Image (tube, rainbow, N blue to C red; front, side, top):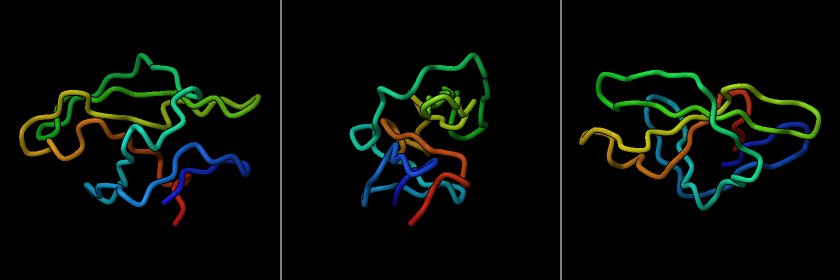
Length: 92
């Protein structure tokens, strides 16, 4: 799986975790230098508190296009250290 915007690949992995139809990419397979933390907040009842990221793609900023659960609840421990992305950027 890849995360692509305008021919730039921001993440690529064959080790994604799928949760609620979202591919969660291991952080080591994500080009984190393009990411900045967002102020957006969300709490999932079973995953925990989400951390959102903007992606800098050249002159474009993809606002809140990625998220992670830094300290997920027990049922979501498999996505600790992973990031998910808006589905329109995820390609096989």
